[in-house]
Image (cartoon, rainbow, N blue to C red):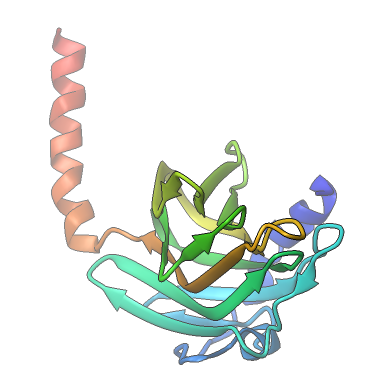
Length: 216
């Protein structure tokens, strides 16, 4: 992916300062239509949803049929993507899209799948690449392929106020004659934004630890 393109996407924070309404359940197409203003879950803004090019030979999972459900639980903000689709042998279905997450601070991200099944040489995979300015890129990978079953993944990183998520959902039915079948119900992306009270509690503890290190 062109790093200049990613830098441009990461540089639109000033354009997303307009007030945004709370996110509600809708299709990926609906979320794309929100543009750079996007919408919020609590104080966390999700914006700039856009489709990305597919891998060679893939057929697009329609953004009109992918349903996004926002939710919040404590310090976790979630987007559940309901796919409810399947691929049989010779099918290769994919959805690739990106979006921005903005809040202060964002400390970690999680990815999971539910309702995934495979048969034959088929596979289900979801990859989320996290692009964070001034930090190394990070990737979350979940999949179901034969004996390999990784239903969830997570990563921590130094706090940031904005990150770009590039998601790739793939249903691969396998090659012709393998009687493959790959199906996926949902995949969920979660982002951890510590509550102010938690940060206030952590600050004096961190200071005490730093003082002890200096004395030692």
